[in-house]
Image 1 (cartoon, rainbow, N blue to C red):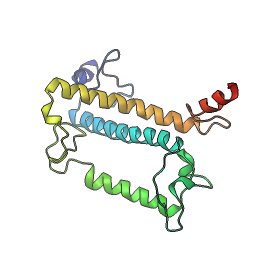
Image 2 (image 1 turned 90 degrees about the horizontal axis):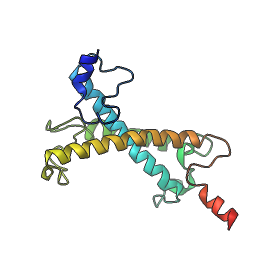
Image 3 (image 1 turned 180 degrees about the vertical axis):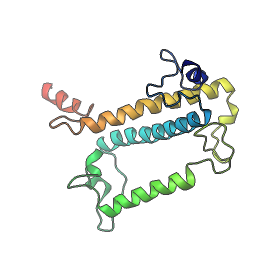
Image 4 (image 1 turned 45 degrees about the vertical axis):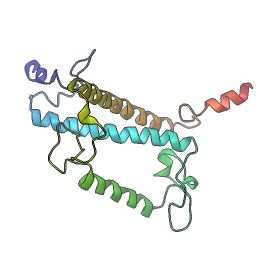
Length: 187
């Protein structure tokens, strides 16, 4: 109903021109606990997507970690970029993928959570250790920065999806990396 949805009109991320936008009505019952859980998941997916988007661009630009990715001496740059690094004939070995999966699982269950029970908002993982000056900001600045992070995460979720889809189109380079070929063709 309109009344239960308006309970979230003043939450971070409820911004012009849409206001509180819930096309699937997942918060139609006005349950604050459900809203906080969905916001936490949105922030987490946004943070992962920001890392994925930047990581995709960095590796496609030719920057890779030094050293070997496995005991056979294969370098990080010996595997393809993007989705092809995970699936396909030249993908990283299954044991390497399992290590990545286990690392992410360990981070999810042991590190990326409110260990100390001191979170001020969903997604606050400072745990009394990492602050980087957050407490020096006023309430308005904190709210603005949380809104910026939320919107950047939303954009990154769409961005990484776009990069993944675009690289599956035959004959099309990933957006932004075909400009060098166009430049060379006209000069």
